[in-house]
Image (tube, rainbow, N blue to C red; front, side):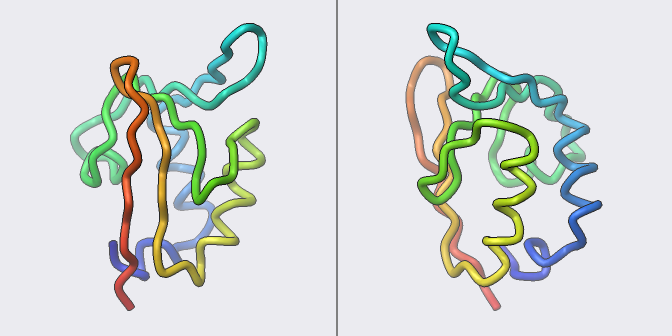
Length: 102
């Protein structure tokens, strides 16, 4: 992943996330992440491997409990050399590892 993608303005990332209609996902009444429901071909998330039905659970080990938390994490990723996204796909937990190129 190119650093220019990460360093885009927060408003860009808000648009990307809104386009996939993230829905809070609960297990036993506890929020465990966000269900991605509308990942289109022209969305950045689709181009890097995300799919409809993925449950986004954490980024770099930080659990995702709210939309606000997602946006707070973006500010922490600006200097990251590696981004690890933990998600659940088809009842299997998987990690996406993105190496950030300068």
